Length: 174
Image 1 (tube, rainbow, N blue to C red):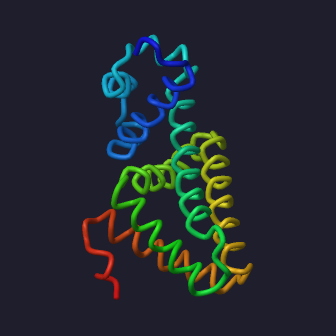
Image 2: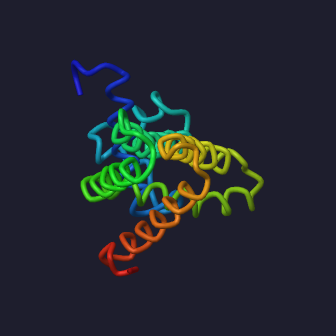
């Protein structure tokens, strides 16, 4: 990875970590697998991140931010209401069809919250909840701050997420 800045290397590690954690989860993913995917050594990973948990947290943050940005960019300049709902739904469908690991990483994060908190570790939950709230706020404002419309958007989205994650077409729930 010669000629690549530390920031670019860190980004490469985060992207590789998302791909690995999305499939195997926190416990099932090794730092060796992440290092191999990105093409660096394990010791190099630990120059960028103090430990596996820090890599997981960075992957959770990036995954949520990718989703939030997809909604924000789609709704930019679109008046609230049905049109904003549709462009955000389309942007999200495009995101998870192009980068399914984004959805799967978020789902791994949701599952990891309970396990971490049962062990007395609140950090994962705090990160996942903050990511969720940033996504919620972006969508809520884009939909004209209508609580019912926002809740409906997320209800349909979570149904679509579940269907996608288990390998059914998004229209199977209709």
